[in-house]
Amino acid sequence: MMEESEGVRGRVTVYSIQGCPHCVRAKATIGQLGLPVCDVDIGKHSELRATVKELTGRSTVPQIFFNSIHVGGNDDLQKLAPEELQRLVRLVKEQPLPADAPPLPETSQSEDAAAETDEEFKCERDELAGLVEDLKHGSVIGSHRRGLTLYKKSFSGSQLVDWLKQEKGMARAQACSTGQALLQKKYMVGVQGSGQQDGSFGEGKDTMESLYRLLEDDPHSALNVGQTASCSPIPAAELSLLLREMILKLFSEHLSADGKSVDYKGMSVNPAFERYCELAIQLQRVELLSLSREEKLAFFINIYNALVIHGYLRLGHPTNMWQRYRFFNYVSYLIGGEVFTLQDIENGVLRGNRKGVAQLLRPFSKTDPRLQMALPDAEPLIHFALNCGAKGCPPIKTYTPQDIDSQLRTAAEAFLENDDGCVVDSGKREVRLSQIFKWYKADFGGTDDKLLKWVLKHMGDSPKKTSLQDVLSTGKTKVSFLPYDWSSNSSH
Image 1 (cartoon, helix red, strand yellow):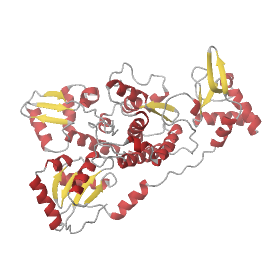
Image 2: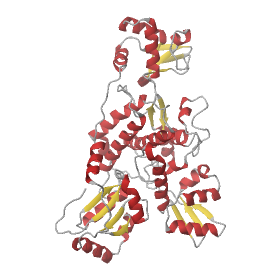
Image 3: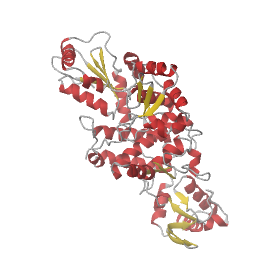
Image 4: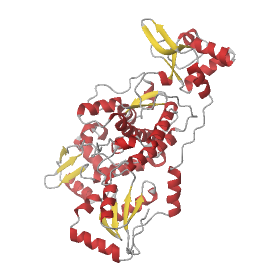
């Protein structure tokens, strides 16, 4: 955490989070001044978040202190006059740390946190995995015609039952219940349009004639397919946390020293990315139906943010409107037996199945099994937690079900604190907001008036909030929208 340096009596403290480009930039600048940086990750040490906010009046990172003097964020650091900067450097070099210096975490806790995130995922092989392996190599899977359609890599219910009887020595009843277990555990799926689709497997004629496929043979473009998830299912919340931490660590390692670009090429050949991909395969059979609202929010926000990075690695960064549209409607994971694109996660699940930008229809139809995943209503705070990789997005974080609501409120507060989120022009009685508020106006109440009330309510106590209150109290307030920075953070 702390680099020792000769002859420096004080300390520069930087509160940061992993994967935050502004934090990396600030630390690089301080390093060039010849000062050691004491870097405190408040993503890992959330117990310090409230204290830092009290000391600085801000929710964003980084927050930088020279001894006990608060400089602000990276922008503030870069804008310091040279003589002021030199004064601060001298102060840290010559003055010992005062008693009111900003706090550091308990060291034992930081070591625990480091040990926690480095824990490797342990795979316990699922009891049906061996059976599925044998089925793949047996003679059951082939092409079947139903009417005019040819279904490749499929098998009928009766073929499966016969194979289980002959190859595995099962009685008929046991073979049928094994078929049911394979469906339930999402090792196999009913083939669309080939017969019954109610998810049950039993003695009936329709079950025996229906066609099935192994989940991995079902054709789709999800990024986590190609092999069977053979581990016992891991709880969804735990899995999303592991995946998010892994890809965030990888992302941080490949962030340039100035924090301005990401080396996606280097990232894709890092052996840690291969481990990430192996873990992402386990999403195929994860259990989603039992999740609470908080677990659902944390799970899908973490997975969305991880999937965006995975998408960049596989497909490159979208550079124009059409490519972005394709990217968000195409990049997907197979989760719990269903395919979810980025668009499905954002608009279908997290916005309570509302139409997205430039969409004519809701993401999920009434009969779509994924509709069961949708939140009962749109959650406006998700817009500040979904990291879309453009420079105009909120900072990347990992979300946990335990305090998801306060984490989301912090993300919104941090977003509104930045001038690319909200600018108050008292002279013109005008409030300029991020395009996000224009695109998803319905989520924030639908009218300018409700939108401004929402913004005011979700702002941290700050001079900006005071000037917004003043502007609103004078009556008519003009609302306009800031240009959105789509520029990529990829280095080619």
